[in-house]
Length: 415
Image (cartoon, rainbow, N blue to C red; front, side, top):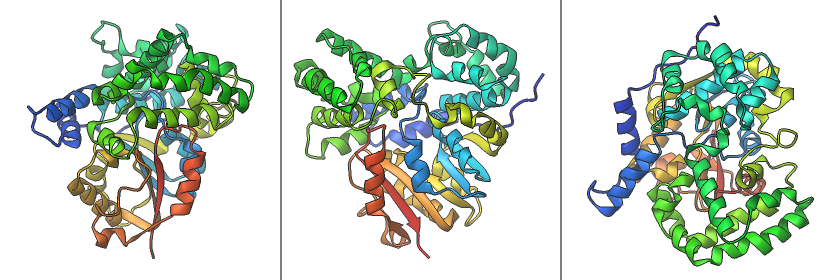
């Protein structure tokens, strides 16, 4: 039997739940806002993102990873953390508050190291239903997992199915975001629109015509306006109450913001290049079309050879950095986690980032709103240590095929 894939120990379930509650809690537990925060924390403790919704090509252009770099990133669905291995860093340490995401990332790494070939790896993670995946899990992957992750995937959901069975039943139809996209498709079909029909468009002009004719009018429907006006209805997008508030104060209605971002996703990039569009409108990948870097056949052997450079830990970003030496990290990837944070949490995080940043270190993150959230919130003594690459950030944001964020931001350590 293959040896177990080594990973750092995770927090206990109670510790992980407490960390997640702390990350989202701003209000009294019994207030309406506090109840919403508790509900989001509960929903966010399961699988949220079967696919990460940040464009890895944009990330890697901004990070400018050099051989030997040391990277700390939020794990999320793991697609990008694995893809960064293509740039030949010395080490990638992925962290996540969500224990399910940790187990999911470790499943990907174990599969990468144990499945016999790219075909079986692609079949396992491309998302099409296949009974062969259950066989592959038992025969190749299960014995390569650490005990905690194996117990998770062998365990059963509230519906009595083994959790690993989602790879047999269409991986991307599961998880909080997968269910949200499915609900969006059902609402569209109530009005006679099948979003999957967009995937028949042969060029960007046809994509634009479909959006203008069929998708854009949905945002004027009373039901859609009512749904998008409620924080809880967008928890499936992984939008916590704080992030919703940041968007709601941007001067537009939520339906207008979502319409604009869906328009970019549908119209700004050819379908042949945008696997995010295939997920949003088709709820799957096109195995013969665009794929995340980690799923491409040309990258399989390279990623397999470097997989032991990536570890996944259940921890908050700042907590993880607090245990690292001074000047020991070259690249930091925060995703959109700062949108959740209070000013105190934000400053505590950047104290650790600045302490552990090596010369020339780079930090990237995304925000729900367009502007960087650091000015006016981060202490001047911290902010002045970092150069904001605004023009580069704007250009990279325009290239981001996932299209769901308002802003992309790159900061580089001065000196």
